[in-house]
Every structure is written in C-alpha cells, then in structure tokens.
Length: 150
Image 1 (cartoon, rainbow, N blue to C red):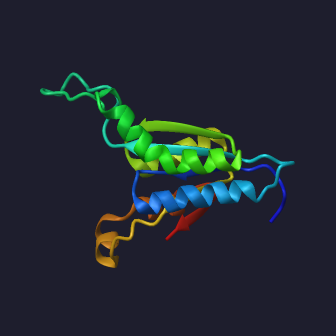
Image 2 (tube, rainbow, N blue to C red):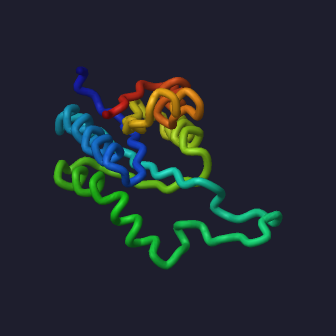
C-alpha cells in the first residue's frame, strides 16, 4: 500500500454492516500514516426528497427536520465519529436524499474520492438477483475502488 493521502467515502445507515464499514474506513485512513493524512467522508442517504414537491397531497417533513432527528443522527453517526475522533482522522458527515446508490456515486464523483467503503447488505442471492443491492450497484458503477465489508 502506498503511503499517500486518500479520500475515503463510507456509506452508513446505522446497521451493523455499516458500523463495520465505518470502522474499516477509519482503519484504512490510519494506514496512510501521520505524514499523509487521509480524510473520511461519511454519507447517509435517505429515501425521498429533501423538499416535498407540489404534487404531494400530504407532504411529510424530511427526516432531518423532525424533532427527534438529532438523537437519530447521533446514533447513526456514532461509530464513525467515535472511531475517527480516537484515531485523529478528519471526518466530514453528510446527509443526502434520493436513491442510495446514485447518491453515493454522485458524492464520490463530486469529492473525487479514492475508495468507497460500504457494508454488504447480507441479502440472499434471490433477493439480490431480483432487486439488486446498494453495494452491488455501487461496485458496478463506481469510478474508484470499492471495498465491500461483510
């Protein structure tokens, strides 16, 4: 492994698989050493749109504007924030709205990341064949390396 600064994107959703991915992303960032500081970007992709459209008859508030959001955000980002803080790794946390795979790929392109770390969905072969998984879509369409954590 080269000792160069890396931009590492980790997709999180609060699941045990995403917690493992978060820990692995920080571990990868630590591997670059103190001379070449790597940076971790943690992204949470929520379904839907940030602002409801005029065609919504009963628009609901986006998740980030609900009263209990701050508690949920702390719980979802807890592992990555704790691991990055303990390892003294710079961390940027983002919440985006839309299709998870598309948003992860778009964010990776915008930030010009070197590697995407994502947890395996753990879904069975039949479900994955019929519906696909976020990790499979990201791995198939990313312009950078993708590390799928099981």
